[in-house]
Image (cartoon, rainbow, N blue to C red; front, side, top):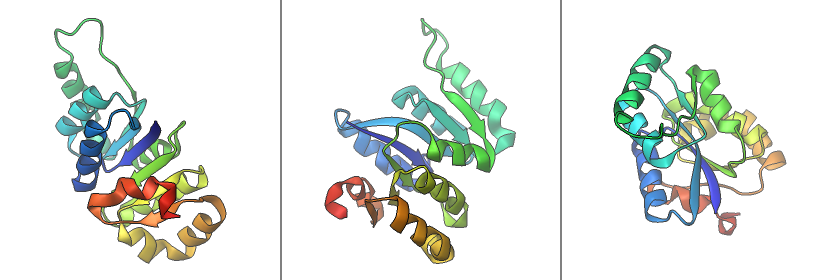
Length: 170
């Protein structure tokens, strides 16, 4: 079973990746999730996939996420799973490098995905990159790190990002 983290879990890349996880639960385990603003969808994802750690990019929405989680857990006994919740860019970077996730799907739009991707690479994670800006804007930093620290690195389209976690891509 491959342990994965998904950065940008509420966006197109993230939801498609989680759809694959849903259809292949024997192959994937979600360790971490990171999202920007969509607290209701993130709360649903937390309830469904039970990650160990979660980051919310928009710090001002933390109380809204906590309320959404509380609402989803009403009437459930025993108390449902509660992950460690972090906020902001540093929180997203911590999720990217966290724990035993073997691979990190980086689906954060634009240059905002650069620092979390670098954090994941430095932590020795395999990267499923679905963000061209990380390579375009960050190539002088990212490519040497990838060459030195990660054995399986591929860039794939939205529909095949999980396949890039496979050793077949190297």
